[in-house]
Image (spheres, rainbow, N blue to C red):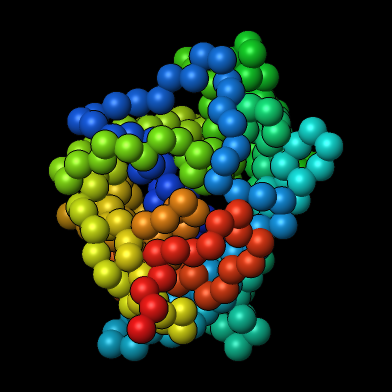
Length: 279
């Protein structure tokens, strides 16, 4: 049932969509030896809701939602992504997923990460403790907290997790982007450090269901063939062309059918959503 594990997939898709903004020329990778960047893109109280759809034929079927929130504390941002299927869909395949990243406010690098996955009969508990100054991380991974086995990861640079990556990348400089640029990044996820290539495909006006028409930037992350994706599959992501850099819509084939995530609602943005096209 890998094709139904879409909450984790949506969180990954949203992460990928903002990773793009860390680059403006050719192929580059991130090097952050001092583990520091100033937050200019988001505020505590930001609340984003994405609606998920499956397409197993000619109809897009609404299946659930993923909610991203940011809570500002004294020294950290608590960033959460919680995904659930609708009750009407639970009989087909129930999903109840939780992601949380505790991020240093001064550097925007994570200190701790937790992922609890409940998708059908599939269960995963995953936590990561980061020591960014020593470039070391310790993860605990298992079907549940009591069974989780420790693993030490030696990092070659300061490292993000899947959720913290979203907010970190929104703060990087976007000047000088050119059509055809490709990007290479890494993140620690599921006991592994993943390299990802992303390609820029220019600007486009895009209708977003129930929200309106927006000026967007269109990108295509390269997909790794495996349980979820097949060789030749192409993911498409549309991002708001404004200071917020919000993923507005993500569409991708999976092993059976297609999956789509659409921004349903938002509040607490740091900036007005200037990419929206008014009549």
